[in-house]
Amino acid sequence: MFDAGRVREALANLVVNAVKYGEKGGEVIVELVHVGDDVELTVKNSGARIERETFDLMFEPLRRGGIGATEAERTSLGLGLFIVNQIALAHDGTVQGESTDGTTTFRMRFPR
Picture (cartoon, rainbow, N blue to C red):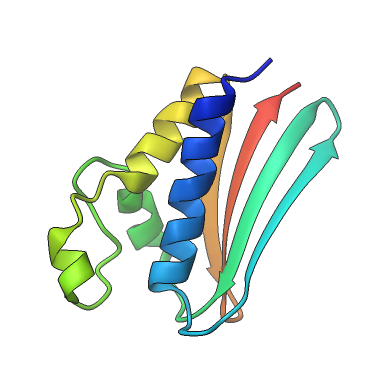
C-alpha cells in the first residue's frame, strides 16, 4: 500500500532533478521493478559525476548539489531530495544515489 500522491511527488522531484542537472538533451530513464519483497523505483540520467560527499548532503533540507548557479538554481530552495527522502522514510523505504561512469542514479525502495 502506497500513498500514490506522495510517490508521484517523489518521482516528479527525481525526474525534474535529472532533467535540470543532467546532460543537456540527455536521456532520463525511469524504471519500476520488483526486487524480492520490495518495489524499486529508479531514475537515471547522464551527466557530470557527483562526489559521494555531495550525495550525503543532498538529502538534507536546504542543500543542493553544488552545480553552477543558474537562475533556476538560485530560486530553488533545495528541498526536492529532502522531500524524496522523507516520502521514502514514511513508506518504510530508502532512497540512495550514486554517480559512476557518467550516469547518476537515484533508487527508492519500498516494501511491498
